[in-house]
Length: 128
Image (tube, rainbow, N blue to C red; front, top):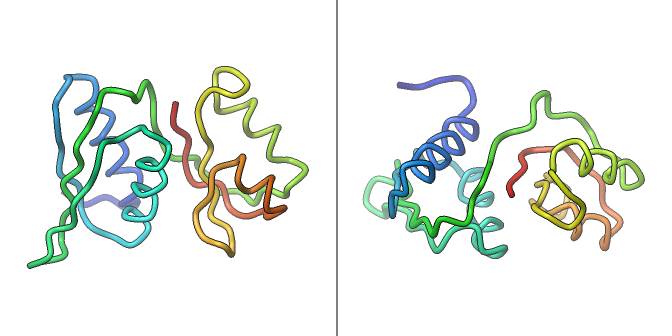
C-alpha cells in the first residue's frame, strides 16, 4: 500500500515493529529515508540498515529496542536557528532526551548539530 508520505510510512512501520519487539523490519527505499536512517543509526536508535542492492526498492532495518516514539513532523515548517529550541520543547519529552531531525543545506542533521553549525532548515521528524 502506498500513501503520500514515504517517510511517514517508513517511520510508522519502524514504530509498529518496535512495539512488538521485532528484531528487524522492511521499509520502502528513498534517498530521504536512507539519510534519515543513517542519522538514527549514528545516534544509536537503530542497529543497522541495509539497502537491497538488486532492486533498490527496500531497506531492511535492524532494530535494537531503543525507540520509544518516532514520527514525522507535519507540516514540514521552516525552523530558524533561534527557534529550534521551541520545536525541541514541543516534540521531545524532556530537554536533552531524543532528537529532532532537520533537513538543512548541509544534509539531514539533529537539532543539536544544526545549532552547532548555525544552520536552519525544514523540520522532518522526531525520535526518542
